[in-house]
Length: 382
Image 1: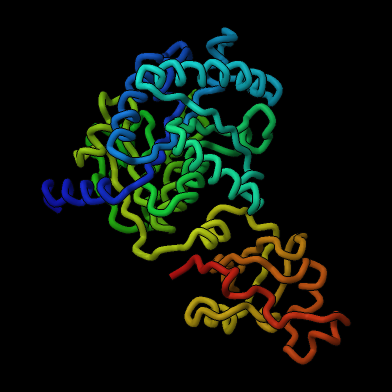
Image 2: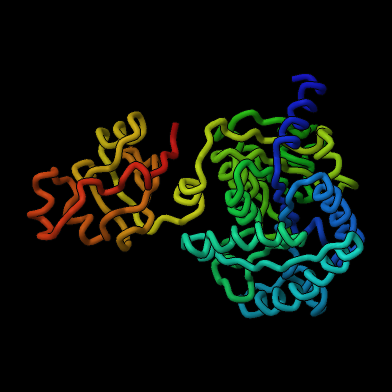
């Protein structure tokens, strides 16, 4: 692809995006001594202001609370145990949001702190409340600064990262552009330590071989790495979001990206459009159980868009309640779909493998034929 064609593609994507979600990593916000780089945050806020002036809404998903706390508390290294991590996060978060607010005030707006946990996305009502809060903040002209609530969330500190959170925030909005800023120039075609490695400017469609290009390392301050970023890219592009990975320490990086400059790696969205309800089912909620389905059920779901019937279930794993999300796995162990189950785990085990005429006699109550209705089911494979 020529450079001019690449630029035109980027310009078209920017022009179409009405909401921009910008994730900023800890290293892109911090100095070597773990204190916040206020000048860089000020530059970031100035660029966000210009994006908003163009008529677009912006959400900033910001890391840096724990890193800021490490600097403020004068710790020699990132804590290893949970209480000290939470103390660093609590101390640093107050400082982080104050810096953002001071920087945005220069442009006539305020920073709005939004702290989230995984449970805010797992429960439909809370998920909708998050989206309503963000859209209302847009109305008031405030800039949402989203972060994981590290002071109370064990899983987020131990396993989570803001790359995935940013992808989940992007899923709240139709066709949002996701920009992931770190200290890497983009996805490289070789190991970062190899001087011959070059940035891949454009990825037209996802390929599992891309994972091999991610070096298995992560930064000293941050909680993620390129593997984490690619996982977030996969989540976002699958449901229709374009994603850019770029270097947040590069001067005017956001302004250049939105001007169509060939900065970082652009991952194009999958052409299919996934409605908001199914984005929540397939790409936001963590499954509570797993159903192994036979080949007939797989073909009916994947190829013909049918509901899942009990007769197609081979085995049931996990504990889940009625209406909770489960994963559908084929006989080769490949996850093919996710959906909201009409039965709890106990009743699902009772009806597994049974035909329609046997269902009422099995449970002794009024039953529904579909274990998972197609309206509540999202196919994950092509």
